[in-house]
Image (cartoon, rainbow, N blue to C red; front, side, top):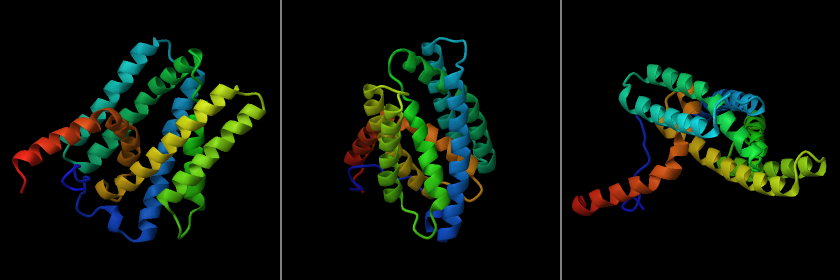
Length: 224
């Protein structure tokens, strides 16, 4: 597979090879920071900014691109982590505004809130048996149960429950996978940057295919 897809980014001293407890502590702190940022987005989903949905979406995308630039061009890792967190936190009102606009247009993604809640619960309760696959499975079930509960209580309609549960389950799998990869490219003490990466890596949905194509072209001409 290494000839078909780019190798995952890894940094010396990464946490994937660290003792289990150290890795778990890193994940717990990262999840806490990420959940805080999700909470800010939820707050502005309830009280969106007085800007158009298009302006908010473009500005949020620009913030994600800025995170990529910071990651690439800021050499001091501690500074990069802090700057990434600051930019990402500042972008959450924009994300909340976009989600509010989608809700007004009939696409209610409030169930995305089940993702940070489920991850926070799983991470806090995990002892010696933290499993990214286990979280992906249980987190998806949790999202579906939340959707059913909100539908049964009349908070959302059937379509909102179905679409929301599907989107939340996909987001759960994404976060689980990305969190596992962060252990390979982040160092101890970089939880702020790691939490920002969980948002920054959303760009992979639109850019990864181009990275793969570029990698294969390079490999074709430089097979060794």
